[in-house]
Amino acid sequence: MISEFLWIDITLMALFFALWVGVPMWMIFKRPDRDPRETRTIPAYLRKPATADMPARRALTSEDAERRELVGAGRS
Figure 1 (cartoon, rainbow, N blue to C red):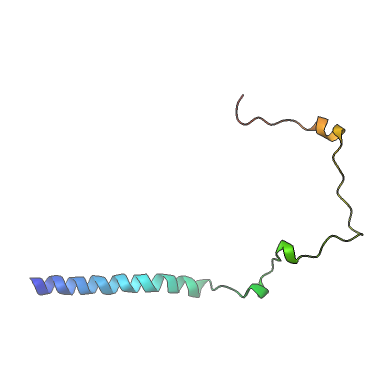
Figure 2: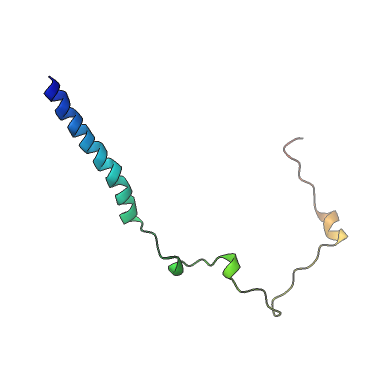
């Protein structure tokens, strides 16, 4: 009886270990991380600053503020 439980425990431990190691390895092989230099997005701090030929943002005037509507915070 004890040897049966021992073999069941060994089998369950092997299955648990295989899942513990296998699932993360499967995830790594399925979607490997890329080298950061190969990504298509560029962080904001590495982008070129705005140049003189780019249009400047227009400052808000009091007229713009009057046109804006206040939005309630869910209370009516």
